[in-house]
Length: 427
Image 1 (cartoon, one colour):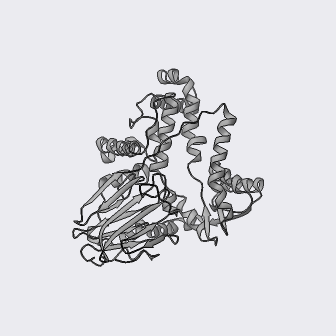
Image 2 (spheres, one colour):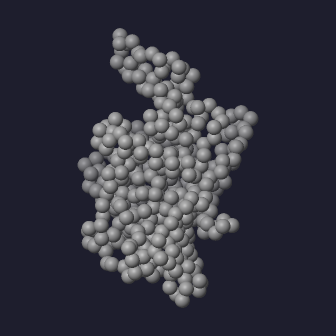
């Protein structure tokens, strides 16, 4: 058994060495991983290391190796239901297992002749730019799902269950101010510990997420990345304006447009997988500027600023009219296009919550669905959408109360939260 360690991911070109039967290899890139060992077990955790009453991580991941006479008898992998920390694992026919928190390490130990990409993974990436749930881009490399516990016993058999779910606590707010106060208290609780971290920079784009978090961080160091193309100038102005309002020490990292492709290729090699968002190249540039840590804010816009959410709220009062009528052909093309967009939104809001054509299903979708159906077939596209909803339903259940608009928005937010995780890729 190799001890947990911070390692270089290894070559992606050469076949990995064959593991002995029942061997366990742990490859962790997280420098803050915790290791506790005694005569009976070795426990490796990320996050705070805190455990619930049933011995599962409250925030982060856990690997537990049970020992007998210094030999590993069984392996338990667990991941808390809300963490963005990842756990990947590969198993061998002889009972060996490799566990890693970085996909590139996981693929590096898989022999090249065993690296196969399924059509499901290609379809997932085309639609969602990631592989939601338990699967990854490569067959044979599995992911521990949020809230899941995976066990490999002495026989080498692997089993998995969902052991943690997210229980929603209903908060009745008396108006907008009360709702804002609830959110304010929650954000303060989460952000306060970050203020004391030394040499940390917030990735400030000037958008809703990063500006909101910076208002809780207070003054400090902020970074933004850009490309020296005219199209990005407005982005820089947003970041500088937010920095000026909040009084931060701001740095803009700029790359040349002609360098983007080569930098993207470097990111793909570093990740061992295609990046989720095109901004990955810009973030990689920011990550090389010197701070020892970075704050990145995610998911606020899914509730408060996402274009789709704003459009749905605007359409909702007029949904019946919009669903029924087409824009007259005599109106200008710009007006007809806007009307068609709103009519499509109204129709999607009328679909069942988990229907691929429904409004919620379209959250965190990056390609045209009809084109995906031409490429992969309508049945596969429908299955991939359904798999995302199944993954959500295993962890949280959206209530039946409230308007259909509220239910669609909430389900869409959880799809975004659980299935569109960019943070773990950038970490």
